[in-house]
Structures are given as C-alpha cells and as structure tokens.
Image (cartoon, rainbow, N blue to C red):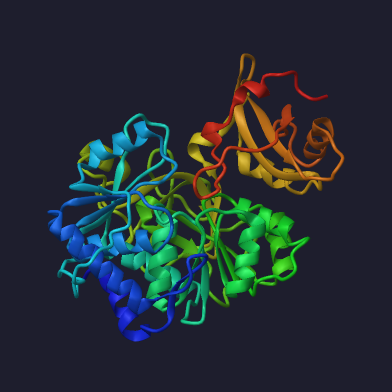
Length: 474
C-alpha cells in the first residue's frame, strides 16, 4: 500500500495517454511518473527519509504532482501548503509539522529517476492537511495511504470515471478536494486533468471546451459564474457531471446549471477529516433536491443529539461518520483528536442535518452558524435558498449579528446580478413573503463581492459584519 503506486499503475496501463492538460501542454502518464521519480531522487539526495515531512508550496501543475508523488515514493509525508497563506500562517504550519524541507520550486535536474515506491501499510500517514477554522492553532489532519485511497476510489466509482474523462483541475491541489477527488480519483481511472492555476469563469469555460472537459469539480460559486459566462460563450464543454461540494448548492443554481450545460449536478459532502468525499450520488440513483446523497463505500453515517445520542430518521442533529476514509487523528495533537473522534471511531463533523427514510443526508447548516433569534432556531441555508430564487440575486450569505433585544438578528449580504434592477428592500420583502416571520433578514445589504477561500467557498467567518449594523430594511 502506497499512494504513489496509483500514478505508477496508471503509467504502466496508460503510459501514452494524457495525465495533465492545460496551458503548459500535454503531459503523459509515463512522463509524469518519470518526473515523480526524479523528484523522489532529488528529495533523497537532500536527506529526506521515511516518515519525514515534506512541505510543498507550489501551484496546480506538474511540479506539484511530481513533488507530491515523489515524497510518497520515499515513504515521506507530504504537507501541501496553499499559495494564498499569509507568512504567519505558513510559519505556524511549518512549526506544527516540522518538515525536513520546504519545496517552493519544481524538483527537476539531471538525476536518475527513482523507480518504484516504498512498501507501506494503509495506516501509515501519507499527507498532513491543516484544517481551516477560527482557532489560533492550526490542526494538522493525518490522512493515511488507506484513507485517501478509500475516498478516492469511492469518488471514482460514484462519478463513473474512465480513461475518456477529463476533469477540471481548478480546485487547489493543496486542498483535500483537489488531491482526493481531483488527482487521485482521476489517476485511478486513467483519466486526464485539465489544470488551471486559478478560476476565471470565461477562461475556464473556453479551456473546458477546448479540452472537452466532462467532469466539473468545484463549489456552488463556480456553477453560478459558469452559468453567467455561458451567456456569451462560443462553445460549451460536454459536461456530464458537475460534482459540487464545500457548501450547500442552492436548488435554483443546480437547475440553472443543468438547463444550460445538460449534465447532472451531483451535490456531495466531504471534509479534510474524511479524506475527501463521503456522500454523494451514484449513477441511476434518485436525486433529491437539497440532499448531498448517501454514504459511499464502507462509510457509515449517523445523526446524534447534542448529548451524543443516535437519532431516528428525519430528526435534526449532528452528522457523524465512521469508516475507512476517516482520519486517525491530528498530528501531535491528542486533545484535538479526542475531541473530534470518540472511542467508537465516530468523527463529529459539527454539521447539522438529518437522514430521511431512504438514507439520504440533508444538511441544514453548520452548528456554529446556527442563528438563535429570540429563542427560535434559524438555519442560514434555508434563508439562502429563498434568496437565490430572487432574479436579482447572484450570490448570498446569511449570518447572525448581535442584537440586544433578541440575542441575534438575521442578516444577509447579497451580490446583485449584473444588469438587474432591484434594491435591498425589495429582496428582503421577497424573503419575508416566503419564510416564517422570525426567519427573514431584517438587515440586508448589497455588496460587490463576498469573501471566498481558495476553492471558491464563501467564507462566512471572514464577512465584515459592521456593514450589517445599519437600520433594517422596511
């Protein structure tokens, strides 16, 4: 068991087929395996041994992939770092993982490539990914060779990936989505990745059409932007599945995307601690609007109360997972591990939802994002779904803001759709007509953009709530 063999096996079976496509040209599986072998040889020359950490700070592309698999070949642990991290954030992650070295340039040179890879077990650490959050101390999730392979295989099967597929590789390779479902799932199937350094909707759509991209891997904001870009595009790509996660997909957004591109939108759910995708749809399965599908492979799912007691179908509680893709814990952080994973192996996600009678998971919201207004629970996602039905709303985020009388008040930030005429009062009134009286946003403002993370996910914790302190719309 070694994840590096995913690339090695693909090179043996599909050596002449493209592994990476994009602005830098086509790179075959055979060539990519050679580059990974060169990277491994260079890392070994620089003193990297089994169990050492290798921090990788490179953009999406062959350089990242070669360094990643090169480290794995040696039995080292890859520590991918996002390019957008601030210096203090990089320093904190370096301090926590103590890597043997930091790779910021492509590992290339006149050396004989290392052939093959070290024999390991499924429980051996392969990758450390630092989770995003609001705590001061970053937590390094330990993704093993077994957990990543299980999650990647589940995703490849659910998406029915084959050698003829091309996946959009715009999700950062430093992120679990870009690695597990992007690189590893694609290579397991012998498919190709259409590599993009960043997401620009017009350029992405043109590149997807040129490379005949069949699988979109992204987040809801990408779907929104691509629908807008499609209005003026000369050609559309042959997308058959858009696998969307990272945040809830508004029903209206999914419907619009399917109408424009013809492919199906599969909403999925995954976390760093689940090594990638844990629930989604499979071919032929009924798709239920608002659901993120069912658990994949050997993944188990349960809903528990605040006290940790399992709940029956259709009752709202915290979603917990157990199975081969769940991480064993956090790097050198036993307290965080014990707080997240119980003695039975169940990982608590902190996400609130329910399972219906058929076993489909419906996420209501993040437990931390629940708004309690005057004693009533308001789930932001429910209000956002209504906001997205308004023709003038392009993007929306609902948050709670402090209120002396009610404890919290419901507030919304809206990015208006270009070319539409509306105002905050009109949008607030639209929502008021469609939800319970305690749910509609009394404070609603239009903004030019919403803060987003490296995958395009809207970051509610980064929202400036000062703009929401004004008098509520009428």
